[in-house]
Image (cartoon, rainbow, N blue to C red; front, side, top):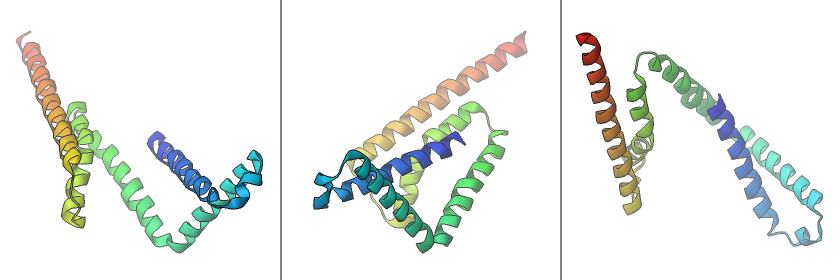
Length: 146
């Protein structure tokens, strides 16, 4: 839930920033006071939000129900069966999976820094897996000896 609220709050800030920047193109902004500017920014932000919701209701329902709520529900069920070490590897590799699927489904390509970042994430996840799993194997062996 905290993750969803964080995304919602940051999205609101992003939309407000876009609205505020759109006001800068208006010549009347210079004559406005700060409260008037903030009020106009919020009005434009909420109007854009309402326009998006009314123009794309099915897409928003799909995004909220399937890709967010259902994915989080399935994730919480699956985490009961997976160790914390393995779950951390799946989470760490999320940007790499996203880039791979964007390439396969959308034909997007990674630049040099994208490949560097994906390699660093994959390397970090692999070393985490080796160190954490080997440590838990040693702990299990030492518990069996006692």
